Amino acid sequence: MDYAAEANSFAAPLSPLRARDTQALSELFLRDDIYAIEADVSQRLLALLPEPCWEDDVFAFLKEFL
Image (cartoon, rainbow, N blue to C red; front, side):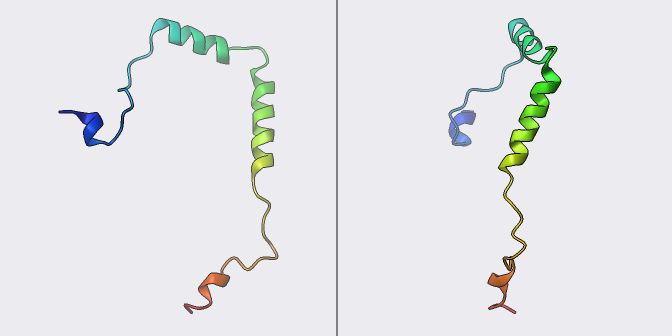
């Protein structure tokens, strides 16, 4: 059975991690400054959140249906 054609996907099937992949991931995440990196990423992601729309009527589109 051709799973790629059936799923309309051309992605290669997942393969298990090799020893070199595990080594690369270890070097990436087992760092002394990983907590500083995590804090920086978290801070930047929080900055991307949209501000709350307190003044907008978020349900205004429902008024015509009610």
